[in-house]
Length: 586
Image (cartoon, rainbow, N blue to C red):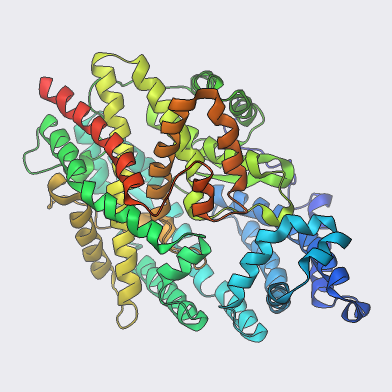
């Protein structure tokens, strides 16, 4: 089995004639957008709208093919100069037509007589939601000249600061017992069964941030300042309000979720204190033991074993998912192991025009890594459900993006716990609570610090020590007395790339949303069995052409009601009670 993904379905390299041809085609399409046929101005919307949609479909599919290729290459080798050069060239072509693209958006927002246009070009009907979103977006658009300036300046502004964080965290090394380890490798040691290894790795990780902390602090400050400026120019009350509109999600939904979540934080603190006592700590859990294994489940899985484990457990849920997993392993969709220059964490990149995905992990062989694979394969399954949409209808928003991934986690962990006994069952229940605590307590702490930085950047600059203090304050509020207040992680603002996007802010609450929403959906699956699957697939299919609340309504769920979120959290509370009972016996 090849442990690195293959990108040959896109291009075999930068010297591939297909790559050269697509670069040429992209430039031609950009020129056509910039200088449309003269006769177009003489035609009515019945001819112009279908023409522009078809042109944009071709342009964005070509752009996506090129952009995905260079982005995936960059993610496994952030220091590759050739990739950086091509990335810049592609973005220069795209940025050169930002004014024209803004003009098209404005034109679409003002189009009337859609029924007449659809009679002439039936495919336009597929874009009803797309046009509705353009009308909403138009209320916050600037002049075409200003839109162009913002887009172009971002390339050397916010986007560049994000790349700096990505580069620094992927190339920094930690000194660990005479070895040089990447950030991903040192962070993986947090799961070691050896307490001394966990503590030493934690200390080595904190030390490795010292050389890069000031640079990343500048990246955080100026990126968030740019977003604040754009937010104000566009007439939003805050970056959070802009994010919610981009997410197609109501503020009432976010408030209902966080309201219920904060009510249940003490329950998570109970779990953390019980784990601390189990491991021999008396002042709450020290950060370096947050991911310490509990019980006896030290089994390691080879890639072949991981493949069979996933296929076997998903076969009973959805055969089409099991088949997709088989393809992902056999057709080299996955880049598994950490290595120098490769970014940390894990992600899935859908490639709808090829009906494939690519998945990056930093696999270490534990069950947790299998759960991570299941999570990313959930994203791939989501991609499979939306791949037949028209090209401009393949983007889903942040909150629903984590639905299928979390649903997959529930399936794989339920199966693993069901099959286990004794100490292994305890280990698996605790492993799931680890992950759940991340999407509740840790995500809440990430939300708190990001909001604090956004609010504070209006009149102050945060040096590295300031950001460390904000991070500690956020962790204390989210984790309460569940963690040892003297052994927290002041540098979590450095290692999480989610903070460093100029186009996507608050990429934290969607994880809590996805985890809790998936639990509500899974409860329905348990009641309905196979009859739930068509509804589930239809729901995922609708995520690119519906609001968050409309998607949930397809399953009879009211997201603005705190009660829905409380019910999902209550199911976690039962698991915590089970853990408390099992640890009390030991």
